[in-house]
Length: 77
Image 1 (cartoon, one colour):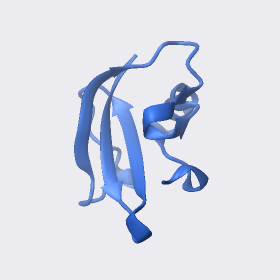
Image 2 (cartoon, one colour; image 1 turned 90 degrees about the vertical axis):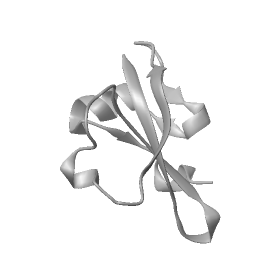
Image 3 (tube, rainbow, N blue to C red; image 1 turned 90 degrees about the horizontal axis):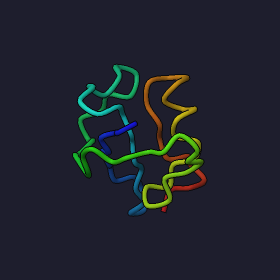
Image 4 (cartoon, rainbow, N blue to C red; image 1 turned 30 degrees about the vertical axis):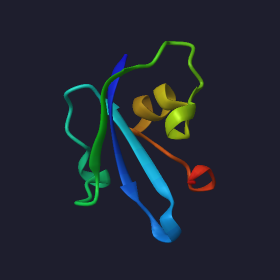
């Protein structure tokens, strides 16, 4: 699966990343004017448990459950 990655700056200079299926809009519940395009067409292999560059755990499971995957609060850097 390929995804598009968005980022936003959080308090204290931390960052959150959002992955959505390639070409799909950010789902309404995650819509935020602070999201900025970070990368397009990032490949996620079926067995991939994490997107380490974006600090997203279980990206395919998250996308399957809610339509997007996001950096967990404990993973923000």
